[in-house]
Image (cartoon, rainbow, N blue to C red; front, side):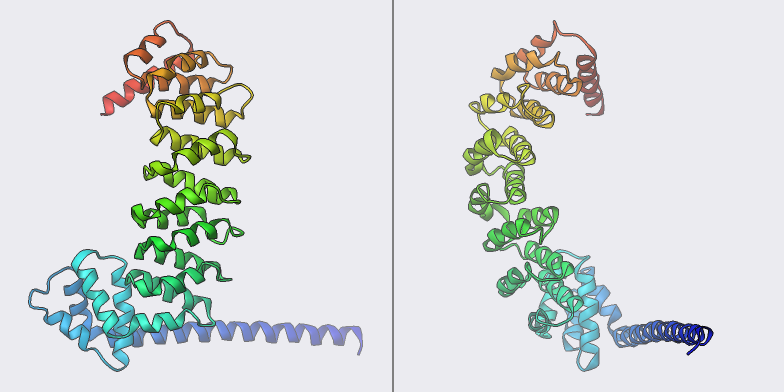
Length: 349
């Protein structure tokens, strides 16, 4: 075959492939549009019932009864509509929609769908189970934290947070460090929703081999005032090999620490420490609010790092009369900045 002929054949093949792709896109869009219209038609007779139940305007339970009685092809369409509403309502309306979904077998279907080959179906199933607060799904959702699809892992951790069962906390914390299987922010949100029952899991995770897991555990220990974590936070602040973990632990210690933690935090402000750790230590001393930190913070007001000096001055202002008195003989831009910020805060308050 000559060069020109080969070129024509190749160009023709590319054109046919492009046309095929265009046709496939158009066909897919038409199918989705058709399915959407079919679903809308199936839900239409129940639209008023959905709205009434969702806004709590169903005093005699008639609308709820009609939703429960939905059958045939309408049932699946109504279930999908209820799931969408569930993400927007709270309280009794949410409980009523969950009850209907359970009666329709939606949660049982969702448990089966967690094994579906499609990651989209697995993710949607996890979301439904979370919205329905399905306690029986916790073990399977924990397994989904290791799912190869990122969207499934994200849906699983969100669902576990919505369900709020603290027995899943160790698995969520482990998943944070397992090759970043679960984003730290999503894991922290889910763990916060599990309540005080995560205390022991946090304390254990402070000694985990992965720095991200330790950082998340340290952050939540401070944010949730989990005082059993204090010894672990002291250790991380003083000696953890990861600077981010040390900074996070220092901030947490500032929130929930004791008077004896002044020395631990003050050591982190010494000149041989990383700059961000020094700053975190000074800010944490202000959060801690112990007057015994006055002398150490006063020495930092004229540090070569202006941001550290400003944080030290701001911390002194939070230590009461003793701290304020220490600033009377101090001067410089960092001190003036700290005083100006305090005046602004007082005006806003």
